[in-house]
Length: 202
Image (cartoon, rainbow, N blue to C red; front, top):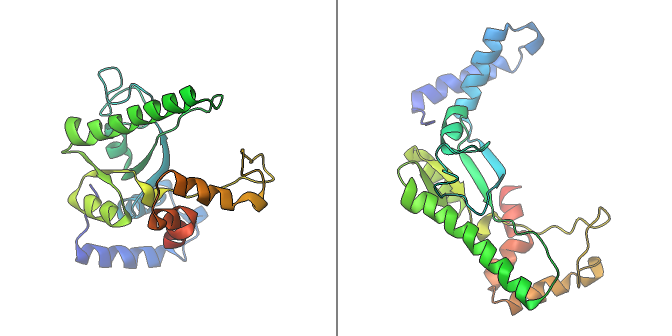
């Protein structure tokens, strides 16, 4: 838990300013480690991409200590405060049946994330739907699982392998907004997706 008092933060700031002119090559390994620990404990550490499996948050894959690179014990031990949990569904042939299966698969992962935070380990981790939620949860001493539309942006990857049906090039960009409206997204949600989220944190 990275909760710092105001006096300690002042000392920390002065220490970091003092380190700014120090050549790391001239520091001992012990001093490098001590400086790094002070910085690591002071900053909010966010990993922007955690994959989860379909059996996440079950007896087979326990979020607390399951055999994963990211579990709650590892996050606490390594000082990782926030994780963005990825609800990834592999693309298949575009058919009504596969669209329905993709939705089912996505909801399986969403349900697992909620099960972890709401039922299994609510005393250790909480869900953040906004930047304000992240700050609030972190200040309480809990780990943070980031999820929700406030954490999503759009990217085409054009000229780097990108291009999908009806958004094959920049000339078809409007079609993305059209599809978002068709699927029931509000103007506010679409504004967040198209750039509001990125501009908020840029």
